[in-house]
Image 1 (cartoon, rainbow, N blue to C red):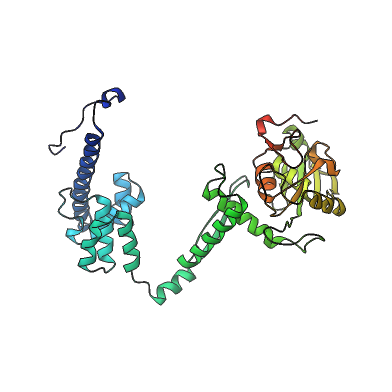
Image 2 (spheres, rainbow, N blue to C red):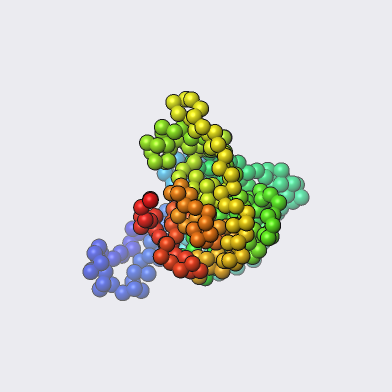
Length: 384
């Protein structure tokens, strides 16, 4: 341990007798030790690279070799490999006076073309700020911008059972910043930023992306409705569902249903289509076509307009959103719920699509008409 005297207590009760300053000092001392060890690793990796060991071992790069042999994250392996190829003084004297993260950040700052005065000043700022300096100093030519634009892409990969889609992609930084800013702005309008129970940012961005797509896919607006946030436009979903009758019956609708393209459909999605859209149903039993039918618009236009006029905005208790207002069946259509206005309540897109039909909550039938509350899926009343 390089002569460093460490604390000996291993239980929380024993640590109670140790001062906070002493604990902090040991944490700093360990980080200095890590810095010295990493500096030694960098020098060893430099020799490994000189001997061309990665290529002889079938590795594509020193980063790959270090990541695998040292069993570290690829980010750590990349930083070690970068420092191994940097000038020999990139990790400092190796005496522990500089953390490994700071040494890597300062080496990248030097490689980006910063002058020595800037590099010296960087020792007085946080490591994250050093990384910001690297970004500002790195050259980005017109050719680099064109290449970044030409490399833009967005891929969609479905899971083997077609119940999940993974999106991945990339684009120039400026476009990416605009995209995230737009999604975040829309996400904040979907759920009040003061709501301490709102979903995490990655989930809100996913919801914002879906709601944007639904805005784009909407057909002509219906009479009495208008488009955009705060205006109450609704989206009538259309679905073509193919159902294996025997499988659906045995699983209570949890298996055997899919779209025309083979995407799996569960009970929540089926209920949402029945609630707010038009659905073409094809039922097959034992490989034989049994029934073809179209449910039609589940809520007559006049009834829909009346509910919009009656409720004006989302009826979820405390919500004032008018985005994508949609009449919702308190007793679901799948459970013999009717289109009578008494069985309908107006909900915004977030409470209708996310809370009810994706999370599986139900309307508490005992809640007030203008202050609807929700029952957890496990507390939902049994089907009639």
